[in-house]
Length: 133
Image 1: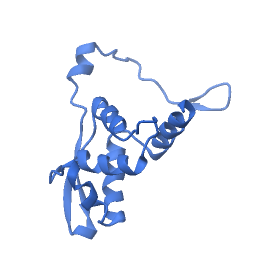
Image 2: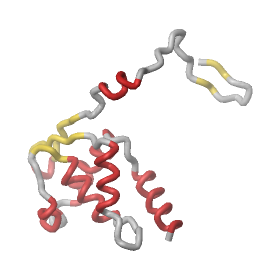
Image 3: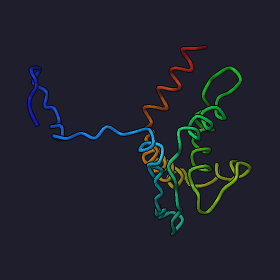
């Protein structure tokens, strides 16, 4: 690492940097899965990271007719579509609302983490939607 002129430390670049091809990127196995232990349920669930397409679909499904993002709906959709074992279906959303917030939040946060989402990015999306209104 080296210090640049502004006093910031920059990461050292490898001496040889491989520039990826389109095929390198398209064929990369980059959708991860993980098992999350949920103490409130005394067991685990298997989760999967979202593709960009699924992320966009979920955001669209959670956006109302005025273009406002419904974060409550989005959270439950993140759970339903991010948990792959056991498999939930959208009609179970009402039942999930009656489950432990701590348990659901634990799983949702892991899904967001492995999908490269953050609470800040959701807040920013809400802000962008509000700005467009």
